[in-house]
Image 1: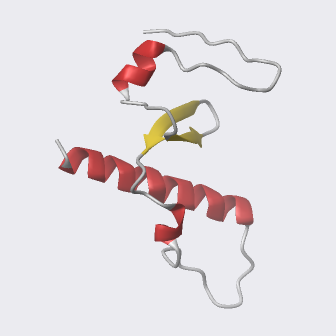
Image 2: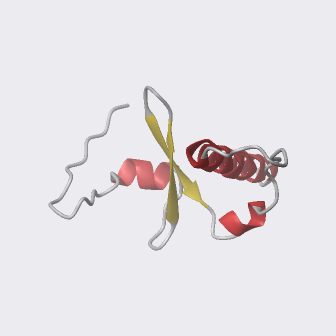
Length: 91
């Protein structure tokens, strides 16, 4: 299924009703944008998941330089995986 949304002058879009219903999106929910080289996926981030929950979950070798973009991507992937696991466990 294809849905189209128009970007406002403020950079905002309205998520189509069918999408909001499918992912149970409610007013005030946070949305995770997961970007790869070819696409961008959106996913509702449940209120009970806080990015701070992942503090210390990345392993970094002592003395090694860290690419912040890589680390940010790893955190996002961990958030998505945690969200997917929790969604599957609640079914």
